Every structure is written in C-alpha cells, then in structure tokens.
Length: 117
Image 1 (cartoon, rainbow, N blue to C red):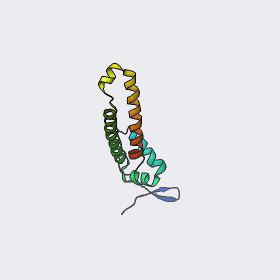
Image 2: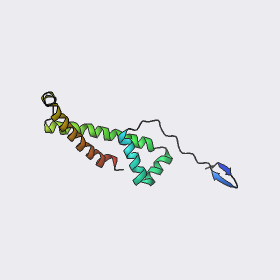
Image 3: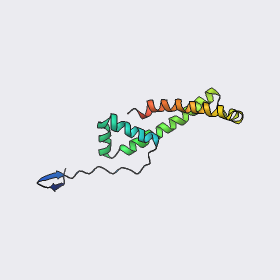
Image 4: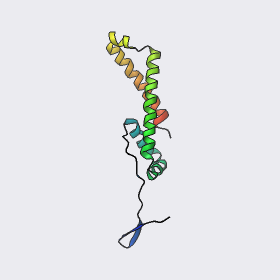
C-alpha cells in the first residue's frame, strides 16, 4: 500500500481521499437515517462514509421506508374502511382519517426502518 504525503510546514501529512459517492437524491427518510447514523452511530457513519457507501445505504433505507409506508397506509385504510366512497360524501372526515392513518404508519416506519441499522 503506497501513501502519498503532503508537506505542511515542517510536517508530512498523508493525503487521504474518500471514495467517490454515487449521485443519488435523498428525500425525507434518507436524510433522517443519515442524521441518525451521524448522531447516534458515529462509527458506522464514518465507516460508510470512508468506504463511499453512505449515500447508497441511505438510499436503500429510503426506498424500503417509502415502500413500507405505502403498504401500511393501504392496509390500514382498507381495514378501517377509508374508501373513495367516503371521500365523495365526507371529504373532511376522509382527510382526518387518512392523516391519522399516515401518522400512525410513519411512526411505525420511523421506529422499524429509519432508526435501526
């Protein structure tokens, strides 16, 4: 293994460069997981960052969270009878119930996907 050094004043410092990260777009869940790793799991965060795998990992978590969110929302809406028929005759009731369902689903996703390794 060859290291390249840079002279800074009287000292030689190794010229370390992190691996290239892929160009992916992180949304809410990916950024929340990245923040969780940085604040709570700094060793894992640093390891993923230095290996160039941080954004890929966060993107995979984001995709899993979005998929789980969609499945949970659909299952809860079906179970509780929140349908398009309800939406047509009681819009505010439908909105209220769907917001409740989405909030509960998001709590599950955050606990089981985002704030886990």
